[in-house]
Amino acid sequence: MRKPTIICLTPVKNEAWILKRFLDCTSLWADYIIVADQGSTDGSKEIARSNPKVILLENQSEKFNEPDRQALLVKAARSIPGPRILIALDADEMLTGSFSSSPEWSSVLEAEPGTVIWFKLANLLSPHQYYSWNAPLAFGFVDDGSDHSGPLIHSPRLPIPANAPAIFLNQIQVLHYSPIDRVRECRKLAWYQCWETVHHRKMSFVELYRMYHKTEYMPPSAVHPVPREWMEVYERAGIDMTSVRRSGSFWWDKDIVDMLREHGAEQFRRVDIWDSVNWSRVYESVYPENEKLYFRNPRSRIDNFILMWLRKTQPDFCIHSEVKYRWELYYRLVHKALRWFGW
Image (cartoon, rainbow, N blue to C red; front, side, top):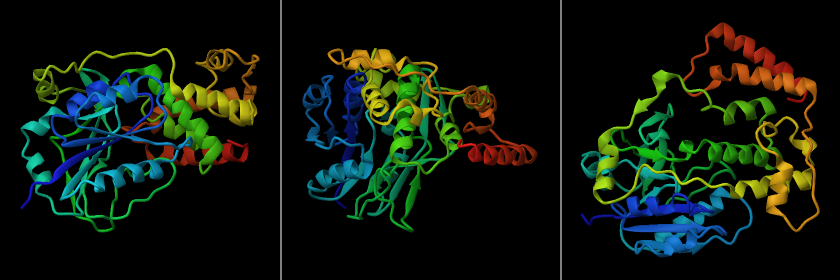
């Protein structure tokens, strides 16, 4: 049987803070790395071009659309002849170094076409500690040409055909670096909440809050030390796996102030974005040549009280919590009442 070509698919937008590390790590196991850049202005494209395994694509879309973005990547991967294994990772995600020694990697290479490969996500709180999601995610697919589709946001990265065979990996996981920089992570989640408010209002504001604050409270029992074998294969290759490059600004900032300017602050009154960031100053930094705009916190006293209650009770809604039945009934009733008040 011919050895499959391993292709990593990665969308990029201003990821210079982590991109070189990602490409160096991924080059150890991928035959090709297809990067679809969407208007980066921080040198990401230049970093991508410097890696010999990278195929650089231009994502010309000005809008956020996950299925179109993934379709661009999958189409490019399918132009490479022969059997293929597709691994879809963001730039802040790397396979644990255990891929180099675990027999699970052989299982992946020998899997039949149409197989979906599920990985656990190890979210790094520091280079030495992590927590995991409760459920694995489909980061891999042994390509058989299946169609790929999904919603605009939180779409599957690769095809997941009905009744497809599956491999669930345990020793090989995906290291997620984004949570290490808490400021960056909070800014990203603020953007998600604003985007959903404008484009995808299928959730109440209470549900929106609960969803995007699931990792805000982490019990000590859910935090684990990073195994040495996850990092050492990369470090032996001379790759720095521990330093964190921080940035003073993020591309999400411009999108958020654009949404505030276009739709008005009132539309985002119940979105938890007002306490930690002065959006008027952000607007001045993004548009220094424009006339100043003042985005006043539009929340009422009642809104502040409800938000205080949501924050106080959020530990019961984090990913490792177990809410007892009597509290489930209480929360259902309160959430229903809050929706009646526009929350």
